[in-house]
Length: 181
Image (cartoon, rainbow, N blue to C red; front, side, top):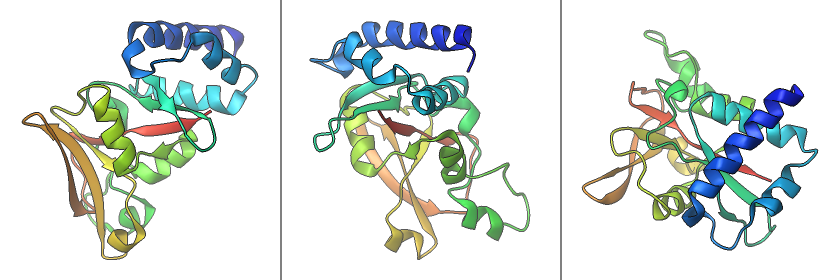
């Protein structure tokens, strides 16, 4: 990443961090910057999250590892990560009307993870997201083995987690990612 791109990304992240302090009480930007300094992989992943419409921000800290959790905080599922089926297996199973890719594969390419159901609910506790869209969620193996995948959204003032065939894809469904730094 070029220095000017890195500096622009850090400025964007700092501005968002400051504007949305309710997402990360007790954390200071200096702590975040210290974690990002020299971490090329994290900066590259955050750049990917930002450039696809994710608006990443810190939403907390992992209790076990102490890592900071960056999550896509765009109001709706990131615009450039929609119309994807769940994973590569689902993509390969589609014979007609194949989407451009899958959520799980794109997340891996970006160096991030799909949000779990618990992480999605934690995100929804710091703001209101996916009022018009939905987001694929990391799906337990026993559900995926039966051909399904989970997704979530917020409607009627509540957070819902649903299931769908992993091969399905919709213009209003994308995915949100989490990055541990």
